Image (cartoon, rainbow, N blue to C red; front, side):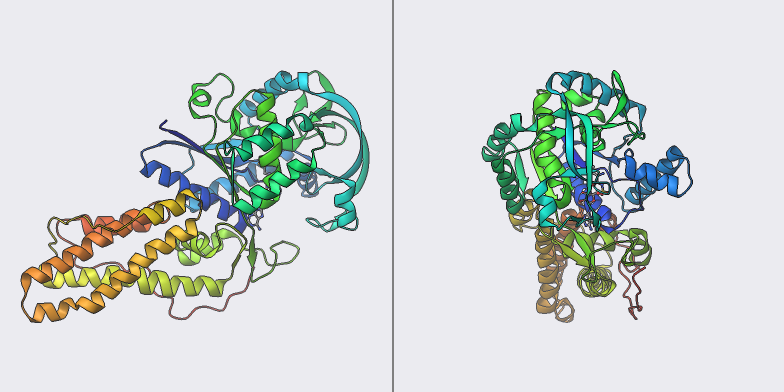
Length: 485
Ligand code: MSP
């Protein structure tokens, strides 16, 4: 099977893109690019989640037309993807007519499974989600995500019998037909399933949530935003009839953050089972990014727009930080100080310097002509294994091990001494080995730092190397004092 389908979650458009969104885009993009290197035909989809009362209220607060507001914010996410050099070839918006039509069709298909019932319980507007008595008790009545009291509500809605599918989902996870990474999250999901699931409500009174997709045949209800948003993964492929859907479903990888793991590990699989569809092969759950050790948030005044980072350091250094210095399997932190260090010590001193000094020596001793380069014989299995186990941070550690050992190789072989001894063959051999190993590094960096990789390849693949090189990572001489915000 040569088709490969990868998705990110679709961010809400009630606020600007932040570092968490950037992290998710970069992780998924690196995996999409890696799949392309393996000659897969890739559909990589992202998009925006645009319905629900949170978005509606925000637009009203800003005195904007709701559609205008969602158009504007959705564009910011498109721009972020572009600025980060994200190679998605689909961008789904839940206000797209294509999505709306297909959601209504899916609703009709699934309605055999639905029943109407009264819901009395707890709700948080910020999460657009219901909470159980025990969750509310554990948090003393205050939603930890939004710092405001849970609301007691009573409404009549359509329900989806999640409980009916829990055993089958549990089994799919146990049998590794539906793989969840990292392991800790997989166990957490298994334990939720073990505790038993409550049925979920999949609609809202239109009076309460007017900004939503109408329930077919019931003008008084709109479809619950989470329910329809989860369907984006199949509507974007043209479920049910489009050939993309036939060829690309099930998704190979879905990338989501830890706060929405349950929606993707439990609710989406149940929906897919109700539709008689296969489950995604892998669900990769990333952690949360904090800023200077503190939870990010507008109200906390420490939110950073990813564009700020890209402007200051460039796109590849930004990608690099998120891939290597934010753990691929748990939470991580961003600070400008840590970013400066990573940039100066690793990109400028280690990688940049390796390229620079190698180029200078090949020019000086071989007149820039490196000739045919024997392929290196490094073991790249640990690199591949790391990527395939969603440890992108470790894959980059492997690449930088090679960078460091090449710098060491130069220090030890001392080509300038060999040149003085006039041992031309040995000198050529050493420099060829260097050039070929650098090309290998460029190849390994391709999924992660595509621009840098291309620049390095362009230099070392040319018959005659350029005599001067624009420094790849100019050192930040005086790391500026940074203010978050
Ligand atoms: N709209 C829903 C997703 C629907 S998918 C059918 C949503 N949107 S979101 O904008 O709140 O979050 C989008 C993604 O960003 C989620 O995967 C979420 O986990 C991730 N992050 C939000 N804040 C984050 C951090 N501080 N750090 C890392 N990722 C975080 O949820």
